[in-house]
Length: 254
Image 1 (cartoon, rainbow, N blue to C red):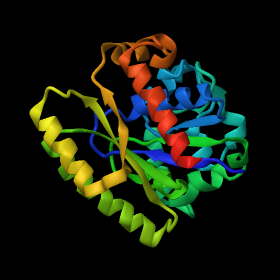
Image 2: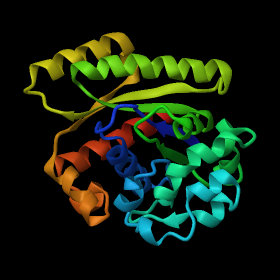
Image 3: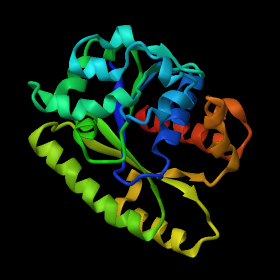
């Protein structure tokens, strides 16, 4: 059994990618699955939100991508039962350094090959840009999860992302598919949010998760404590939503 590798990506920032990555990893771990979260964002927010201090890392995903260390030696324990391949600002320089390396789009894929059998799920928290780090994520993944807010500009960004996924599928990773679209920061009282949500369901059908992630104060507070919301406040609306998302994913996979 090898892990299902899922890239969590959207080139638009502030849509809940990192929040989703951390809380989905924790929710799947609570469901008894072995999970690895890979932080591909130089900001290192998924690392900090998993209870790991990015300033004290001796090695990170940066060294893994450059080939100076292997993934197994770099993995650390997250704060909620999942493993973490951490990142810090060193990763910002990786883009330039990767350009001249052989197989630059597949560095992450090759790095994960030695550990993919150790996990049920590997989640890739991609940066909010269609750069070489994101392309590495898309080349390593079996599928893409797209968190998005239900607002007008989100639809425009989504069509760009779908085109990118198609290009990667044609030229680099024929296995790549859309795992699902996740509606985040959802406010059912907002008419525009309802309209965009309906449009998504019309266009993408069952690729839109039934689970909706609401706007929730506890979700916003949890990262400052370095723990997922499912640990911070398991009864909060945000925590219950991510636990439901994990359940929906597992029932789809069954």
